[in-house]
Every structure is written in structure tokens, then in C-alpha cells.
Length: 190
Image 1: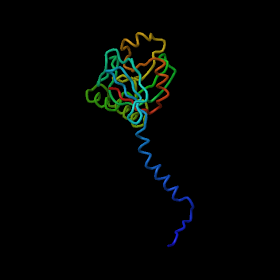
Image 2: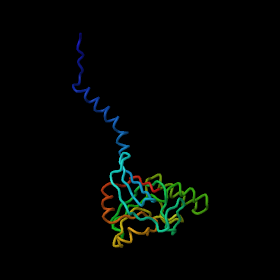
Image 3: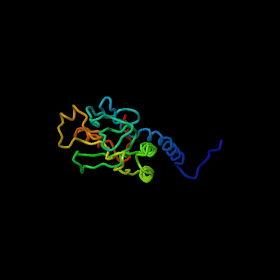
């Protein structure tokens, strides 16, 4: 029996490591952090790989509830799938995580209804494709995100939906959430 000798020692280990890495990539994608806002239970959950890794109770949403058809000034929280586009502490709400609202779906519907112009729709589409914050001052509204209460009353926050359309957590909760999320983190509001 002849023993086969290979030119590069350790080739097999390198090949196995590379194969394991290639197989692990899809698994890592499934482990992505995402945020789920349940407006019925007034809770926000951080999920990783399908399991809840952190949960926040007593959140607040828009003072007039939720909608699939958000309009500027309606004080309603838009339902849908978004992603975080900016995170700042330069806000009266302690911390603000801006979402990519309005999204292309809302913009297309608004264009069909005549609520926004072709130019506004194209600007929203460009921002969506580039992964940027879309125009915030169309008839669809904007400046939607997840934020703290700043100097607001924590007891009122726990008892009432009070925002203009955002999702609000206590300041301590938004700081804790900040440890989990980054720009691009998916957020579903339902």
C-alpha cells in the first residue's frame, strides 16, 4: 500500500475549516438581531435566531393607535417592516432610533392615491435602494422611530399611548435596547 504525500502540510485541516465557515454563514444570518413591536400587548422584543433575548413591557405608541395608512399629523404608529437608519442622543427623548419610514410600499400606495407626487415617490425609492433615510416631510409623515421619554412623566408613559406615531420606551429601556441594535437592524411593528 502506497502512502500519498501532499505538498502542503495541513491542507486537510484548512479545507475542513473553510468548509465549516462556508456552512456557518447561513446560520449566522439566522442569528441576526431583530426587533418586534407588538402593539396589542404594548411590548417590544429583541429576537436572535427566533428566540427572545430581551423584552420590554409598557411601551407607548401613537396616541390614536396604529395604521397601515399613516399620514402626517395623524398621531398613529405605522405598521410594517422597517429598519433602523439612525441612532442619536441629540434629542429631547433621551435617545432616538430613526426608522426608514416611509417605506416603498407606503409610498407606492400613496402615489396611487395621489397623496404624494411622482418626484416624492422617486426620492423615497432612491433612499430605499440606497439604504438611507427617506424624505421625512411628505404627506406620509416621517421622523418615526423608537425613543425614550426624556424628561417626560414615567407614570403617564406607563398608562397612556402618547406619541405622535413613534414607539416609546422608558429612558432605562431605550438605553438597554441600544446595546442590542445598530444601523440596519430590522424592526417589525405589528
